[in-house]
Amino acid sequence: MTGRAHEIAAPETHTVAAEAADRGRLDAFLAARVPALSRSRLKALIVAGAVSADGETIKDPSRAVKPGTSYRIAVPPAAPAVPAAQDIALTILYEDAHVIVIDKPAGLVVHPAPGNPDRTLVNALIHHCGAGLTGIGGVARPGIVHRLDKDTSGVMVAAKTAAAHESLVAQFAARTIERRYGALVWGVPDPAAGRIEGNIGRSPRNRKKMAVLRSGGRAAATRYRVLARIGSRASRVECRLETGRTHQIRVHMAHIGHPVIGDPLYGGRRKLLSDAGIAAPTQALHAFRLGFRHPAIGEMLVFDAVFPPYFKELINFLEEV
Image 1: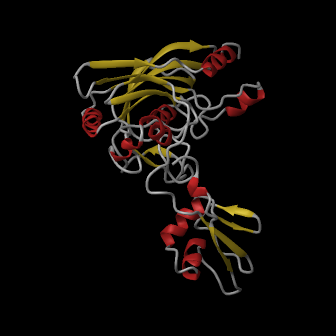
Image 2: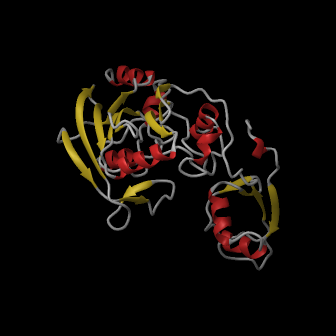
Image 3: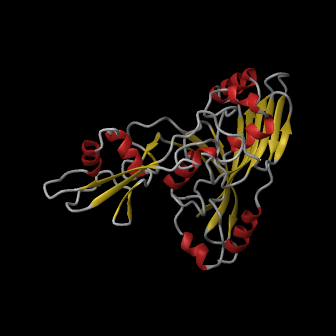
């Protein structure tokens, strides 16, 4: 099965009018008026942009109810339990009966999730490897043992057998996988090499972002070293992960005052690039090396991925500003 079959069905819609006596948080109000949807479900729908009023999309579940306003809820159709196979081009660095190593481009989501139900790496892998992949490591993320952010490019490995999946997961858990990233960051870190340590969790100020937290979160550590200065405003760095938390390098580099250039969440200064006509399609972060022990033969394999062309464009610009 190919294509976007789950998009054929139209969203289920609910329209709720707030009366003069209605008050309080929007998610609680809607939950009371639409019993078929729980408050937690409505909160998720609001954050996902599925609730609107007077043509405006509302994304704050805590927004106060406004009497006289008509709220529209668009509940998306359920996604299929098993991701569909979709013919999406892959850059394959290595493949055998046990694993497949690819160079993921920026912009490609790794696995289906709210907001990205298909056209993901998983959909591409099922098409390329066959339906047998769907039984490897779980229904929603077959074959996946690690991931890169949507806008981070670089080397990834996926498992093609249950034994390979188990072996790779164990290697990641034991931190024996070699993972090196190249990044362009604002400023020049001082010292020129170091270790950033700080628990990472959801930001209390912006739920779309991660942050280094004083309490809570999960332990995270990143090693970095400056490879070269770029003009007077930036530098090229190499980062190695000791752990693998969501947005880890991006969060840690921003935490020490040197965010990844072009990063829409943590980077800042994007206007400097746009004013100069630099079309940075994504953050300048690339997983250029991945090393792991082959699950079947035990040999250590190392793969490198060439940096995308926009890195050179950014370096040329930054050398002149």
